[in-house]
Image (cartoon, rainbow, N blue to C red; front, side, top):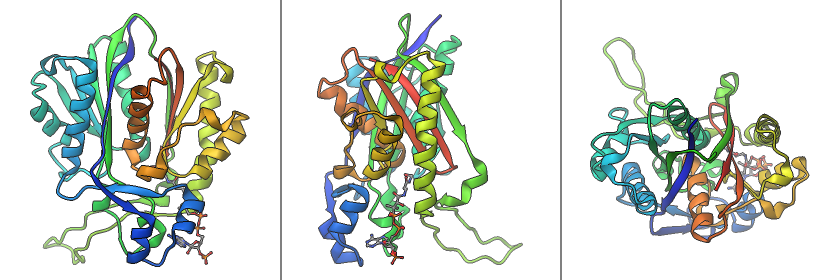
Length: 321
Ligand code: UT7
């Protein structure tokens, strides 16, 4: 039996920093409101770089760490909700840029749960013997789909990309994963529905931005994430005491505190970096993973990744490093 194992991580963050103080100049908000309600101080904004540029740069960083020859990559999955193209999948642009001629490439749409959904998907291919490895990327240029006049949302998000390379191994790396969708609540968080004018229907052509029922999504995350973590631990026959760190989607420090409390786990087991990057949707878990790996924190450690977001969707994965 083969298991997926993470053999390399990478990330890319655009250079431009947009602070809460900068936002005070653009809309009716304060640094104090943003930081106290979310834990965010600043975020990165991509100027000329596209969502696929960010994906390519994170992919190259992860490939370098994994020392895998691009021609030997079997599968590329880009989790994103901000791709510039409806088609082709931006994973095909990544394929071209890195020279992964022999890979199957497709995108995956599960918003802020996308990274965990992509890990789960890749791991199925590896466990059933179809593929020997996979390059997984979460990439977002959220600044493209934000309504910069809506203070409820524009202060929350940032641009960036995170990536991992997963390879088949005799040792268990990706130990267990659970992913779920709750389509019933889809309207709580939507973005960028493109309306086009056709000869058959009179519609206004306008960009639709991210819209979120913040409180509903907050409650959803605080309820489903701890439940999902308990469930995945049970499935893996592990205890919370076996887990060294939790890496949750970086949306709000208050969500992380609530989840920690519900699990009766100390807050210092929960990694946070939203202070510097804001909410980068599908990229957040990959970015955090790469920071922890490069800081030498994950050697021989067991980690739980947990995503939650639009769909609504959520998922948790136990990873052995
Ligand atoms: O990544 C996908 C998953 N997304 C999430 O997990 C996000 C989950 N939700 C949240 O993190 C929180 O709900 C938010 C951070 C989005 C909002 O925090 P909240 O404590 O739920 O605030 P609220 O939306 O209930 O708004 C409270 C007040 C409102 O004023 P009134 O109506 O009480 O007078 C808002 O108008 O805060 C006001 N407000 C702001 N004030 C200053 C909303 N945004 C701002 C702002 N600056 N940027």
